[in-house]
Length: 347
Image (cartoon, rainbow, N blue to C red):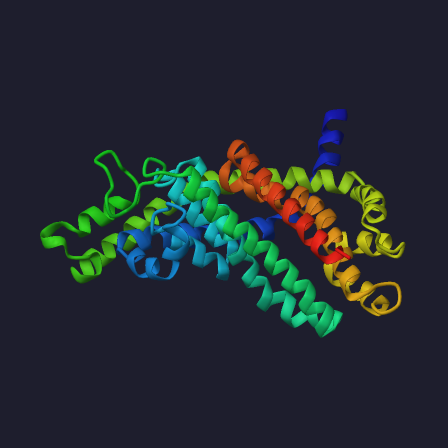
């Protein structure tokens, strides 16, 4: 009887969390499915040669195959779909772990571009005002671009032809999405979409067939990790982490009003911006206001990494490689936010 009551209590606690997590997992699953499916289509139809013309200035200096450019440009429209494409390229053997980390790093600026049109321009700049808003968005853009260029440099230094395999020359042991390209290039080297409806349907069908197994592995893992993290978030007071910001603001010479702003900014960017906007010209200069928001961004990034990034990255890559992605993302963002703070607060 006691075990039945305990099970009922556990179910009562889990159900609201499951209801909260389910839409998030479903949305990510749909976007990843689109990304993986498009990745298979892009390779199967030979579309990577068109994308290569746009992204070659990033992929080729970084020693990445042309098809990775498809994922990079897709990230500007949907970071989740872009990540799904990279996961497909890694699983198919086109990218090893180092090359995947390089590609993920290069993706940073393109993920930021999407937020310019969906959040920064329509929401944040009107709240902060043109001067402070543009200074903040410009600082964030410079940070993201610096991380992307670091990825390009890392690829140039760390990668070689052995790290990647281009769809234009798959080896005999490649059982990945490139098989559709091989089939399409028989009979005179004609591309799939030039061979008629039957071949086109075959490539689409094969892309769909290769997408489904990934989703059956990814969705359960994603749901479990999100469920566990959400439960932990609801039982632990994460606001205590903002206490670490006070010594940092003192070290940087920011005004005392920065600490409560950072505390708000860390948990809600929009409310944080609305909190600091009236204080610009009084407690804050435009530069110290932007520096305060960047410090809030560091704290916010720590919280969002725990609440969203870790579940997402673990769901996409698994715990082992997902931890590497989180570590690289975190280290680079903290380093370049630190550089931005030095530039903003320099006398």
